[in-house]
Image (cartoon, rainbow, N blue to C red; front, side, top):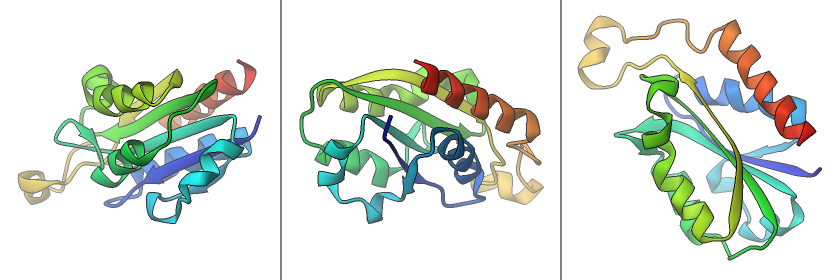
Amino acid sequence: MRTLIICKSIHHGNTQKIAEVIANVLEAKLVEPEELDISMITEYDLVGFGSGIYYGKHHKDLLRVADSLPSVRNKKAFIFSTSGTGEKNVGRNHRLIKEKLMAKGFTIVGEFSCRGLDSFGLLKLIGGINKGKPDENDLKRAEDFARRLKDS
């Protein structure tokens, strides 16, 4: 299964760590939104979309990619993220990008989220929350998530 992962990770590399684990298991090509040639999408069976969560949604560059995608048929996608709240709000945090992808014809075959170091805004004054996240347990969960995708 040919897999492409589009990931935007900008503050602490939280989401990049997760993306690399998933890419390794799936033997996927990993690109940033700015590097993506939209026509590449048709070459892949499975496409992953991930970033940190900003005000309850994925990074604006990733959302822009979702908006610019062509309509597809029989194309699978998965969504992943890291955030201060982690999997607690995954449904709300993934909702916008999920709706955009489904409107383009993608079938969402999995979602993954975990906590990441968050030092945005006032949290910076206390050194952030979720220090050490994602940790080894989170990376193992990401690996297990990718194996399930591979087996499906």
